[in-house]
Picture 1 (tube, rainbow, N blue to C red):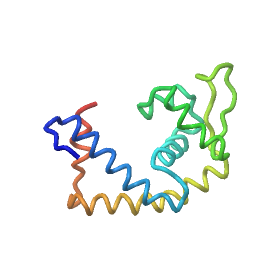
Picture 2 (picture 1 turned 180 degrees about the vertical axis):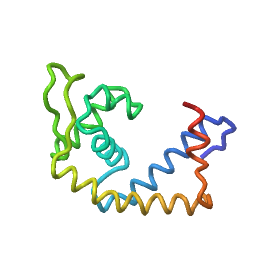
Picture 3 (picture 1 turned 135 degrees about the vertical axis):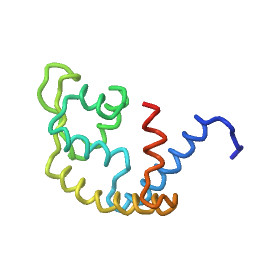
Picture 4 (picture 1 turned 60 degrees about the vertical axis):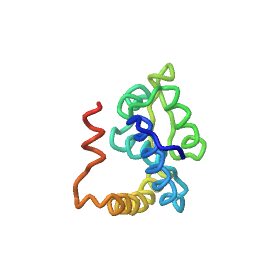
Length: 134
């Protein structure tokens, strides 16, 4: 990989590297980090609309729709109600709640590994540096 002085390129590379770490850790649960994050956010928001879920995750609705399809196909979520796609509600199924609980264990392991790799000593340099970007 060519070195880059561009901060944006460096952030994107770091994000891909962190995502790979979490995806590998969560593979035994059959989840990717993006899927786990969506399940967790749906559980936290309790039946959000597509629009409110998109807003909460910072995803475009079209990207969110593509990310929700595998979860719906595997019966971890259902889309219910609403006259149009934006107003439909996303709801965890029992299978989705079980997958979320199973994934939480692997997520915690990845979180610890990520922290150990960065040597943060309990600090949150990623959150602090990205938080101010908006």
